[in-house]
Amino acid sequence: MKDTVEIRWHGRGGQGAKTAALLLADVAFKTGKYVQGFPEYGPERMGAPITAYNRISSSPITVHSNIYEPDYVVVVDESLLDSIDVTKGLNPAGAVIINSTRSKEEIEEHLHGYQGAVYMVDAKEISIKALGKNYPNSPMLAATVAVSDVMEREEFLTEMRASFQHKFAKKPEVIDGNMMALEMAFDAAQARGR
Amino acid sequence: MAIRERLSGNEAVAYAIKQVNPDVMPAFPITPSTEIPQYVANYIANGEIDTEFIHVESEHSAMSATVGASAAGARAVTATSSCGMALMWEELYVAASNRLPIVLALVNRALSGPININADHSDSMGARDSGWIQIYAESNQEVYDNYIQAFPIAEDKRVHLPVMVCQDGFITSHGVENILLVEDDKVKDFVGEYEPEHYLLNAGERMAIGPYAVSNYYMETKRAQRQAMIDARAVILEVADRFEKMTGRRYSFFEEYRMEDAEYAVVIIGSAAGTCKAAIDEIRETTGKKVGLVKIRVFRPFPEEEIAAALSGVKAVAVMDRSEMFAATSGPLGAEVRAAMYQAHGTADVVNYFYGLGGRDITVSDFKAVYDRLETIARTHVVTDMYEYIGLRSAQSEEV
Image (cartoon, rainbow over all chains, first blue to last red; front, side, top):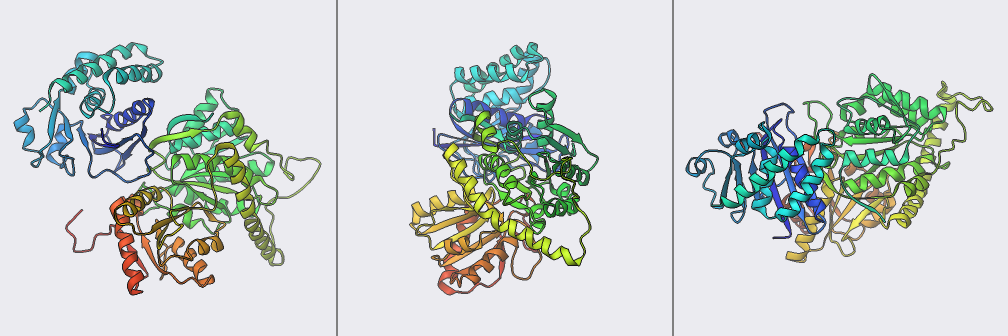
């Protein structure tokens, strides 16, 4: 793993891309890393494209700019592929992780010739199976950790369970479903490389 | 042992407020204020602190109520941002001229218009003449540390001035970073109990606060405010020393980064300083060029002699402003730095840049281009424009 891993998230307002970026910062922090998790705010409204970012490093991070040459890109909403060049600046040694059921061939038409790895995750199906509702951000978070290798599977799951226990202290019944969504997405992403 | 945490800048300030447990916090509870009052309201609702939270109907009222509470003898704080700060304008001057040691957490964001919610220093730079001490931060760590130091500065008998603790909107206010928190008891010891000397609710000493002053008195009052601002300089450094003893983190009027042998220097305020540091490390490592940074922490009182001394050995300086003032020659920081250098008979060439207005991003490559430009200026001694822009599109540009 290089010293600083940079990740860019594309989603739409209300889908939890910002929350996922903050959760990733949280869990990486707990494994001893220096982290940044921050959103880029445009007009705030449901459904508008939003971008969020992570830097994860073993040494202190001073840079406060957005990320233009990320190692990984996460696309939480595939309808953004029509309007945004999501792989712009993306490291060819990295990967793009897309929430989609479409074939790789169909998706690649939207990737402007990106030469790196492409991972598809059916976050909707996983979320509905595990939680009964479509919350794509948890599965996409797990897939991102699996693909980027910023931490080990067990370490990730242990820390996430602790986070959920804190976050959902008042509704503990949703913790197991969320954990299941993470595990399913983690394993699916690991199994489905290019 | 310090507490290792990760917090947004807003969370960091709210946490500091919890540790200080001020007497009164009037605040406007929605946009354009910040998440800070919301987090503090949670602490109060959960019984973690006993601060009196006053929900007010506007930011003008927020500062009015803070002025009232402080005049009464309470340790009073508030928080705001952008247009909220603009609506406090009249009361900012009232707070400063009545010598009320209020601490205001300000998240720096653009003023309208066009309507914009992102990082920009227009709000606090506009208020630079209001008589408040202004302290700025590069990171979440710094805004937390500055916030704690603000109380002993404001409340010192030699000072008695309000302090604005500023951080960059979204970039640090909503960005989560690693932070080292100080233990509660140490923070409480550090800020101590506020014991005002003169206050309205003291039945034993009748006094008026904020009366009319005819021309015969007004000017002396302003001169007295100026003296407090001058005297604040020593207090700011004393408090910083005490803070360093507690945490090991050193603060002053400004930070000099790799300035020992620097030939080209950037002077900047706020979060972009961190990005500039990364550029400096890269330039020094790859080219050996002697580049450095002066990051302003205290803008009021402005440390003019110290700044001039810090820049005395360099060949060219880029002063970078994150707010417009529509003057002929410079932005607010540019004007101060140029004046300081002129007074000290400085010889370096100076160029002023505007960057980051309304949240426009500034990158490591942008800073590299600035240092390249400084090298050219030092060689030719030609500064074509008194100020330049970073990332500004021209009228002909197709790019968006």
